[in-house]
Image (cartoon, rainbow, N blue to C red; front, side, top):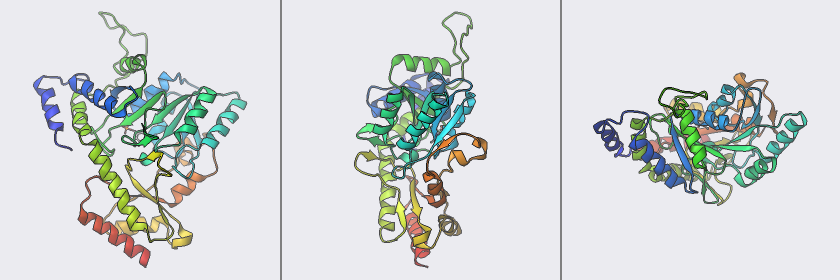
Length: 367
Ligand SMILES: *Cc1c(COP(=O)(O)O)cnc(C)c1O
């Protein structure tokens, strides 16, 4: 926590705004809108997953439809496709940003259209905070007239060509889950570009009650709005977002220095200055042919010293729950999964902890 979260929560208690609406919800949305720029409209919700679900509904996704989704991601990017009764079509990564491969994306759209099914939406993810190749992806979405949804759950504070991640698509989604760069304990937001879209999202997220003195409903609603208490945490966290991004980026620099002289290990980094990652998680690719060791060997060496590291997200097209879903690509994401490892990346690591990490790595690659 940054320090001021408690102040906003106390205000909510003092004024008895203990509800899924109130000054903190409005204030948190304004803080996010100011940070993201581009005159976006933000609706604060109960989770990033809820935001993806509502984005799909607002994109017109219905039972039997197909939705394109980056395969290399956390399952929450794809699960809401199933909530809609739609089928995910998974797309491989390109090797530079590990995100949606524009070439495979085009191939998939063409092929699905040949089969008589034009995908209803495209979900692109900014993995570990790394912006996807948005120029190419936005151009393809526009060319085919398919709604673009940006899963920026891991990328608050990341920019592509100076524009904030989450503001490129018709919809962008953010997450404030406990593990994200800033947190409200649990929470999310849906970024849109018009007042109509935001109003509709708020309407659907608050049980879709029609304008009438009695309880009247002509849509299926959801209970997805953010609580005013939780939003108070968010307002406090927005005051320290820039510090958190700096701390994560400093961890990335730490690993760049650490691995500089270790051959066969590549630290996940921006391809060029168009990309600015918040480096939510630092990750590496271990080449076993050069190092003679696997990422699993390194994970176990860390574990021996009670340090947690994790394999990269396992691609969705390899997940049992999505077996049978179409997939387009050239197995880039499989190779990333086989050889990639997420390293300790927290904003609050101490010098002493960094020293322990350094010792494990130096010993592991020297032996
Ligand atoms: C965390 C995350 C989500 C889900 O957000 P919640 O707020 O936890 O529901 C979606 N997509 C990605 C890529 C995530 O990392």
